[in-house]
Amino acid sequence: MTAAAALRVGWCPGALRPMMSRDGLILRVKPRGMALRADRASGIAAAARRHGSGQLELTARANLQIRGVTEASLPALTVELDAMGLLDADAGAETRRNVVASPLMGLDPAAAFDVRPAVAALEAALAGAAGLDALPSKFGFAVADGGAMRLDDVPADVRFDALPGGRFAVRLDGDGIAAAGCGADELPEMALRLARAFVEAAAADAGLHRMRDLVAAVGAGEVLRRATSEAISDRGEPLPSPLSRGAGGEGEATVPEGGTRDRPLHGTPLAPSPQGPISARRDGYPRTPPHGGEGRRPASHAVFDCDVALGVAAPFGRLDAAQLDALARGAARVGAGELRLTPWRALLVPGLAPDARARLAADCAAAGLIVDPADPRLRVAACAGAPGCRRGSTPILADAAALAPLLGPGAGVALHVSGCAKGCAHPGPAPLTLVAAEGRYALVADGTAADAPAATGLDLAEAHRLLKTILRLDRRP
Image (cartoon, rainbow, N blue to C red; front, side, top):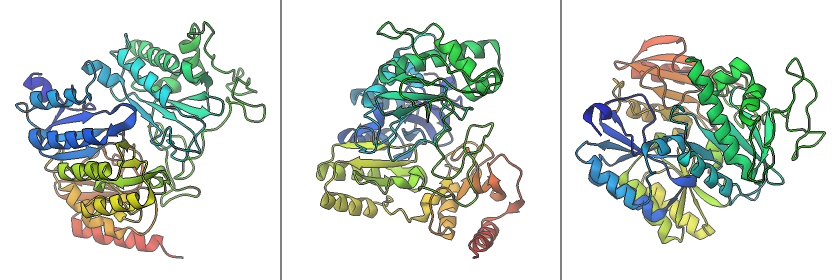
């Protein structure tokens, strides 16, 4: 890789296509099936220490990032990651293999069925696909198993929701209803055809950046029609066609296999987000009530309620090599050979007896990791800020740590501290957002980092006082 290529910014980095930041190159490791063997996690920690700054990040795409890599150390790091089986065949395969799935797949007794074979087949199909070079690097797929850890708050261009009987409902970003159904063995072909339909449309219209743009332009039914009109499954049967909506886009739906007349696939609304009701947004992210919502705890906190795995988070998604190694070695000592990454910047350690779970939780807490769901840092989203990010002018992580104790008990992100208006750490709206510029903050209420602020020019002390007042008023009976 040339220096010019390394200095390019603005994409989602990979291990084979790193991105330059102020503190060096960022490499993103994408474990297959969101699962990472404990010994490989220790290997990543050692490699990050040898060839980078030793700082790592858990991402919202259930990946693991290594920071502070130099161009001189990059080749050796790449060789080590390849020896651990963590690299794709090429950068294109790595970019296309953008899949988030239920972290407890294969373990959750509440799941409709075990979706691991479908996820593995989807990843393999995307990695080996031809004709998708123009697919945006952030174009992603979500596969939900119907269990306890919902993916409603995880952005995705195409969603596959497991149904009883080994089938999936297919949903497109920008449309709140299931547009079609497919069998588990048909999922990879359906995903590829939807991706190709998007690529073909985007080639003719430069304004189409993500699936939600295409859905807004032609409708989900038309996208499905383009993708499935000539699709044939491996069994020689037609793949499911988009379901009829009637001339006006409404009307009675047909009932594909896997639905019922009382609850057909078409016309079934997306399940409410655990964070509260979903309302339509052009950016594709659910807008949540300002200070929490009714119903179940968000999945970002449900990782700590899990009966079959120990949930472990890192403050603001950041951990160092020593912490990752401590988690991996501790897991191995108590008999857990695998870590599961989640899209909520937390990990799961499955397969632990209660006493082993308690011992590992104590070891993780001693290493500075979060195992207590009441920890207020879980309610704060924060980016790298200065000095790590090129855009950053403010020490975001230190400021976020200082502000976190203001937040009381609760679940879900209540405060977003962003180093700039890009809002990488939390692209969706938050009840309160602080946007930094040269050591000062602007405050946005119930919006994103790019929205108009309610107050500007705040230093950290002033931001602290204002947040304290707002939060105190919000807790009044």
